[in-house]
Length: 214
Image (cartoon, rainbow, N blue to C red; front, side, top):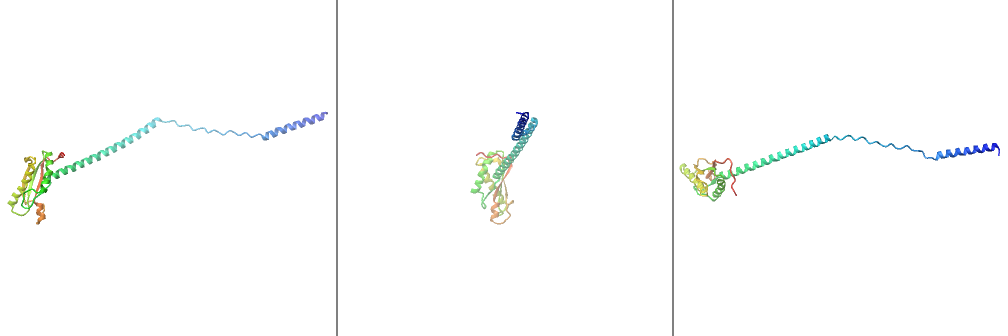
């Protein structure tokens, strides 16, 4: 083989090698850059003192609200108790001072008068310092002198009924006003029926009445 043939073969080998290198470079996948990793934000430091202060304020606010509610509930309870007590006292006094009525020209107690007097007795017995005055009244018919005497008999009849059932006699005073203090100024049977009566007045010991025992 001649020198020229060797040179030509060497040139062909070099060219083939270059071609292989170029083709290999074309088929190689391009390398991708790695994705950046996010760096987490720094967590702020926990202020434990601020948290304790916040909890304490919330607790204080709740305690204050509860205290206000308790104060309101207590005031309502006291008001209700006071109203109930006042109502009871009014009821007891109304029982003691309830009026009784009489038939024309009579001083005997009617059945309704006895029932009214029966209701007074437990209150009088539960309050030994309580004293009353019974005032007898008449309608306008009859003389002034006669009506004064009739009014006195009516007051005495009520006192006798009470004392016979345990009320001490010196706790019941009697007086007569006859026809002098009518509650109805009319001149018919309706007015006269209202004026024929005994009125009861508390004269001592009535500031605070005890409830009768049941």
